[in-house]
Image 1 (cartoon, one colour):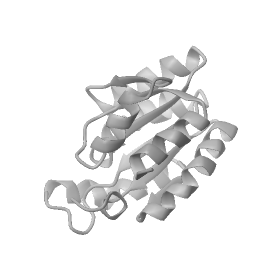
Image 2: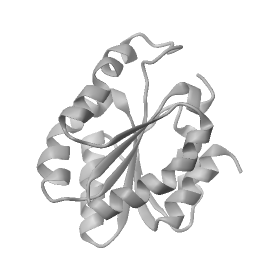
Image 3: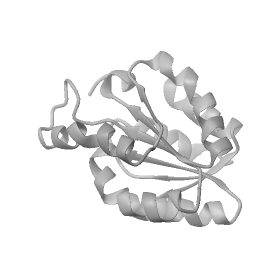
Length: 165
């Protein structure tokens, strides 16, 4: 089983039935696996805050949700995270490609990487950093934690985790 299949298996075993995604080269494989999964409704979003709104609506209808996105648009989501997701205590696992780290080929990605962890810490969002493929073994436990405590949780996945650029 490859890393993308393992992630989707963990989503299914944790009864996640609604996933919204935003495009990223690093996330392309897991997005394809989500799209193929018969038990997950996959709705691509145009913007990250829109995706969080979709997840909130699905959550209010009784679904367990997840957003898959890049860190470079984290700043766009702050108002939605605070005034909707956190205020109403909605569990929202966020699988985030952590762009802008070592070996990043696109210079503009670096700036948001400098602020990503600090922004998540300022919002009191538990954050986990996956830098090698063995880290995926923690995903099941992180998902259980997210739904137990009704909080958003970030899983940052860097290029080393995905096997490079």
